[in-house]
Length: 178
Length: 85
Image (cartoon, rainbow over all chains, first blue to last red; front, side):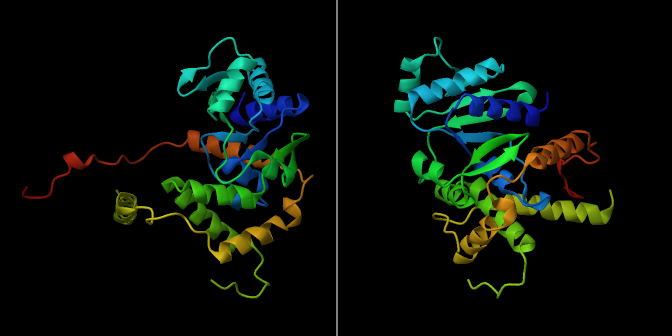
């Protein structure tokens, strides 16, 4: 199974299980793409979840059912994976990494720089992927969060993204200032 | 190696070596923010649009890259020598 199919299967399972999440990061930007020129290569895909232990536990279970390996802080996630453990992870706002078939890496994050989950959820878009409505954070939220993260890779990404937008947006509007 | 290709690769290497992110926090320009807003207003950015093609495009691209054959290997800096050294 390739990475795309693995990811689609996971997202489909999460949606079917009523797990709350939004796609963020570069993969979120990719889902906003209007054409291939606005897609970007990424080594992992980020899902932003609310700080809700039951929701996180349901996400873990969906991952396990599809054969994903779960780690946190570089260590295999403890067993039993129950609500107590999920509460600890939520308290620490720790990230869970899920590694799936085809080498797919999915980060289940409880943190999105500058935003609370509910505000991102309220303004989400839902794009259809393989017949499933996938919740995706607003593009404005994703790029703002990347700017706040401020890592070298964010600088590069935002510069490239800005250039791609300038290339692809219709030029029939008055010149932009700034 | 073709001299033009070599020169281009050297330019890329130099840029990679010398690039540093600007100091301080990232400030998104008003122009960029307006571009993002305009982009979000496009029909392709509305909820309900089918984006199945995105994953397929990227998977196809990964397969293409995976089947690429390296025709040039960067020399390690320590192995470089100049005439007469």
